[in-house]
Image 1: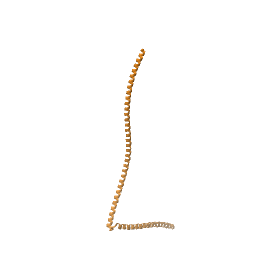
Image 2: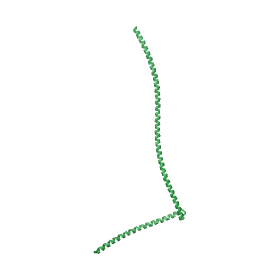
Image 3: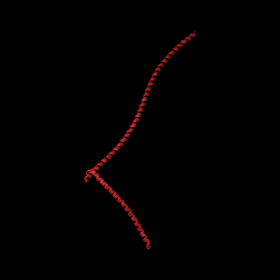
Image 4: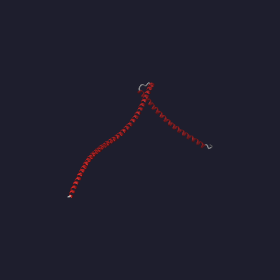
Amino acid sequence: MKEKQEKVEQTIQNAGYAYIKRNEAEEELKELKQKAVVSKKEFEVEMEQIKTELQEVEKFKEFINGKTKEKKELENLKAAIAKTKRKIEEKEKSNALMEKEYNLSAKKEEEIKSAFERIMEKTGIKKPEDLLMVFNTLYEKNQTMEKFVKELNEEIEHLDSQIDLVKVISLFESFYYNSTKIASNPTL
């Protein structure tokens, strides 16, 4: 019986240990559950932070892409501005040239008016049409004179060539005469 009693005591003692172990296991399980809950909350908080960071990264990426587009647009605008400035400079040069030509034309017009006024004073011609008739008449006379001078120059050239021909013939005759004279007079 002692053996039985020892066995019963051992069983009771084992049951006590088992009860203690079960309580410890329950405590550990409770602690693990609490840790799991805390870990889950921490994980969820971390996930929210990561999601927030990802959203911020996406926003930053969009911001950078927007800035890149803005930079390209800005470069395009700068190029367009430079092109427009070149066109403006070309237009300013063209305008300056046109203004210079206009001023020159205005100056010539004033000179022509002044000359016409002097012509009117000297000749007594009052109308531009009358002056035009005088100029046409003078032009025709000038054309006639030029034609006459041209004919005279052509005649002079023709006479010069005849004179040159006569000189050559005269020189040839003189040479021929002298050579026949020498040939007929052996004493020379």
